[in-house]
Length: 142
Image (cartoon, rainbow, N blue to C red; front, side, top):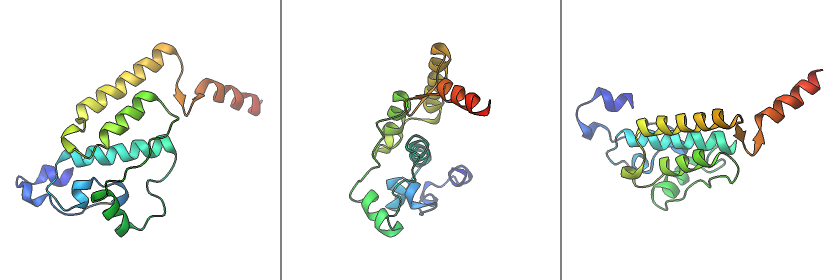
């Protein structure tokens, strides 16, 4: 993102910068890109948090570039996890960069998740109530 903000010439935003496992398809193809490429990368990080895995683990980076950029393979969204976060991940990882949310929209959706969790008094991560985990931890420590 800093590269985009420094330059006023969009043609300069054309190189493959970053780790292929988290890079947007348009970056992998060497196309001109904008902040929506960062949104894709953020979606990969969210996917990592929900899945507790490294994206495309074990795939050679050169092969991965072809698979993601040309064959359009995607990571599989885990069944477990907060439904709103999973939907946000799907939108961030859309191949059509124009369909990816803005950063403002992401912040607003994350605030919505936070407010819903406060309202219902629980946080669910991978279908486990945090309250239950804390109770087990306190039992173990005592």
